[in-house]
Length: 68
Image (cartoon, rainbow, N blue to C red; front, side, top):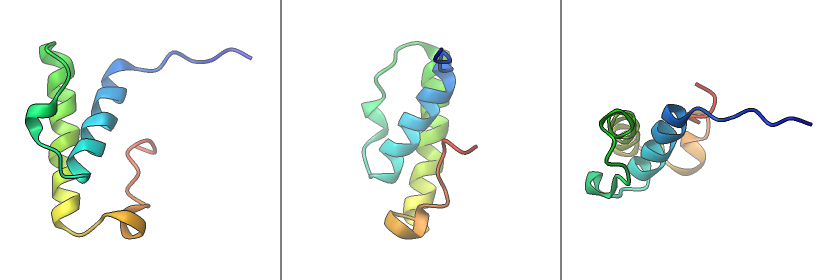
């Protein structure tokens, strides 16, 4: 069975979201590429917003960024 190649930007967004929702700092962005960093920061911002709104754990399970 062939595996689809994952989109780098989608992966950066998801990793940023996970970092934001877990409360990590935005300085933890692993990428130096400006485009990947932009997607990571976008995910991080949304994740932080969700954390502040209380959508962590079971209450935030419907907010899975992989579904987007």
